[in-house]
Image (cartoon, rainbow over all chains, first blue to last red; front, top):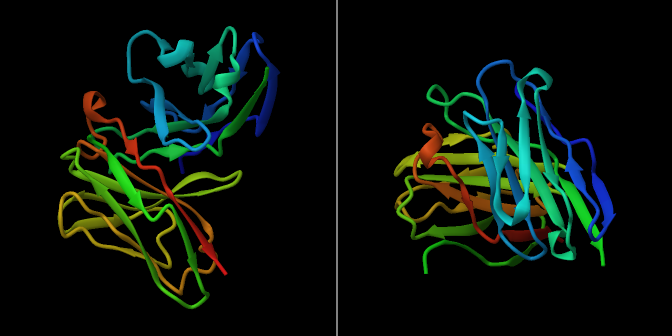
Length: 116
Length: 117
């Protein structure tokens, strides 16, 4: 079965520190990858997504993620975090485009706390 | 204002009672989904529907039921058979079932927090 692993449950950073959140998935075929963010008290919203092409994907609010097929990874990065980035981040995978029900498999999430 | 609404925001239920969570969308999306979010567990799919009058079980459907009589509405009933119903429930929709990268984004509602007393 497909699965998604997020390595860190809770990350605490100071403002201006660099961020990298790990995400690994278990599926050997074609995948489509997503990062969602849930700010305190707000809806879950899409941060960025990868389908094909350039493996370095840029999203909203200065976030980017790199798809490394050989490592089954899709890590999220931001060079300099702000207090407003405090949120929970979820990695998700859809591995059967065109053939399946098209459902997303989510990781367990990583809470990011940014100290002002 | 387009979007997905869920009501109520907080819901309390006594053990042994069924309770229904509302989800409405005015995005004209065909596909709708229910997820359950537990601390440290991420989101797990309960049920999904790709079209009116049709729905499919997700990974954790036991103890839940749904209906899809209208395109805009996808209510979830948490039955007394659900052994551990206290959780945060999220509804989502997408233009269609995620088959095409250009139309695949799922949009989420604000959630309902259910507590069983």
